[in-house]
Amino acid sequence: MSMIVENLSFSYGTADVLKSVSFRAEYGEFLSVLGPNGVGKSTLFRCMLGILMPSQGHTLIDDRDISEMTAAELSKNIAYIPQSHNPVFNYSVLDIVLMGTTAQLGKFSSPGKEQRRQAIEVLECLNIADLQNRGYRSISGGERQLVLIARAMAQQAKILIMDEPSSSLDFGNRIRVMDTIKGLTEQGYCVIQSTHDPDQAYQYSDKILAMYGGAVLAWGKPEETVCDTVISKLYGVDVEVCSLRNDRIRVCIPAKNKIIKE
Image (tube, rainbow, N blue to C red; front, side, top):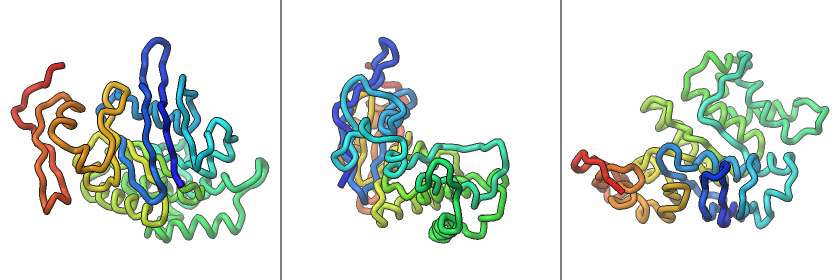
């Protein structure tokens, strides 16, 4: 089963932001949407989440168009994890995760013993159960990101859409968070992240969608997409992509420090 985006286009007024974007993400896969600022990654995610209505094209979950789904149905299929989250109140970590369980409840219901059990189980799965009584605003950035992942898991949606999940983290937290996210695909989750970092995308992704000017520049396996020509085109600099550890890692190095002109 899968999430399929077919010929998705979107415009803000006369400005075309997305231009016939198509790709497929399977359960158990990690997909990175790679590209610079302003390329349309956030707009793509908003269309995939049903927040924006595309001018043409469709997003399908298990062969069903999301435009035919209610908000409750969408929340049972897709969970969104923002880049950052700063609630006004200093909710406990457990309360933040419990918020994810409300997708299972009726309009006038509140989380009970079963939802609390599920929330604690998810925290234990991510090895952060010791944080459950801490204030969310009092923990580190890496811990917050793991809590948001826990909230998404408690939502019990099998498609996780993440907006640059590691961009604001230090080196250690970045590795811990990305390893955790990658591990979710082994549990059958479909993970779709946006990122600016081609090195990270190559290391963790099963597939990469490289976007340029609102359109698909390259699509496929990391070894097919993270290459000199694609990365240089994406970011407008002359780049040499170097292979390390029998090509398990690729590193992008500025080749001549010159700007590439159209």
